[in-house]
Length: 308
Ligand code: RIB
Image (cartoon, rainbow, N blue to C red; front, side, top):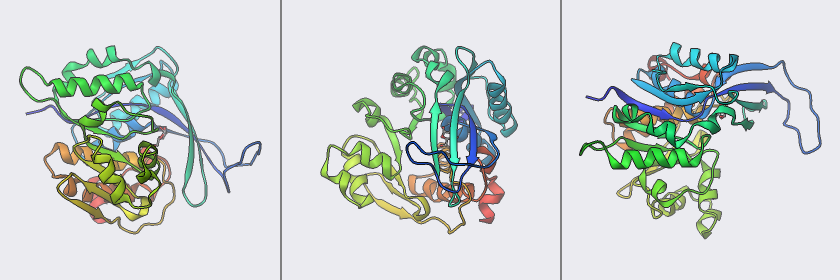
């Protein structure tokens, strides 16, 4: 038996959030709401989302030795995430500057801070966590070489025992090495990320998510999930392609909804769901997460998902 259904290796940020009537253009200043500070970061968000749903979860991340780092540790612990893998120090805690408009859409600028100091050596030093996890989930707010180290470690396994299944959400999107792409099961992308990864292919300018999924599968991932916002998500594993619709909800703040989706998806895969079943659950989690403000603060419990 594994100690963790899900290990998340990724970022932890303090989210500095301002509501605006509309987001400013270049050279423009707009007035906004009072500042609110929330715990965030794509890795920390995924871990909290899964733990709040009941997952046995651990986080491997790096925060600064400062108040924001403590905020993040506190939020992980209160959600039930094992923080034994959260390293402290080396740089200030990562910060995300976020504006949210009345439709719930956001714009985000991230100062990576300590996230950029989560090194391949840190990953190697955490073999015990990797060996104890059914699924490992990664994103790209930490160095790509650390993500590649996670993938290599998972692929090598542990003394003849397979390593954890790899879930990757390449956000913020960047070109991916072939061995990283090939390990994804699934690669989880939104429209923007799919188009970026396919920008060297005519399919990147298509408007058909099924074409994106097919083209992405041909690059090596074992499976692909394309998230489609309020439309739901498309799950593709080479054998079948299934569009899973989202429940209709009123969006208040979309921040972190993709992380809630991916954390929930990775957890359900970790407890043995097939891809489509896991996506069906995850779209409900993502939908619930847009109905409240903030990232981690908006993530639902299992009871709230069931009631949706
Ligand atoms: O995906 C949402 C997250 O992106 C925010 O919490 C912010 O920290 C950035 O990492």
